[in-house]
Length: 76
Image 1 (tube, rainbow, N blue to C red):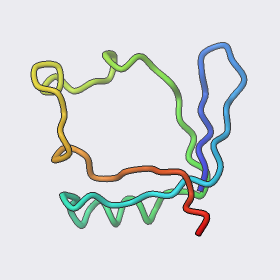
Image 2 (image 1 turned 30 degrees about the horizontal axis):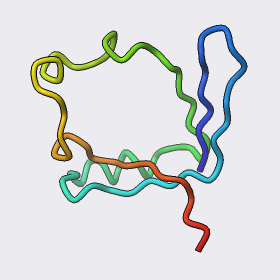
Image 3 (image 1 turned 90 degrees about the vertical axis):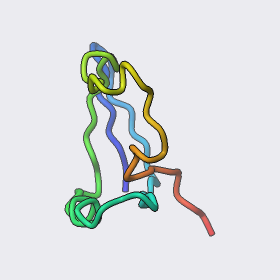
Image 4 (image 1 turned 120 degrees about the vertical axis):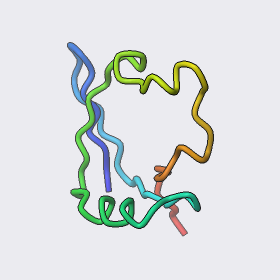
């Protein structure tokens, strides 16, 4: 798939060739949600702290808090 990244006052950036991989900690709900993603996901860049969950301000997230990883497409 691909990402379209909107930045305030700038032209959108496009990242093609993105693939998602499930974390070993992911629940079955993550699979269901990921299967519903469109091939191009539109993202809006915002300051992290404006959306960062309160629990992550006191204790930073670990791999246990990540359900889905995004990587560049594997050309092989």
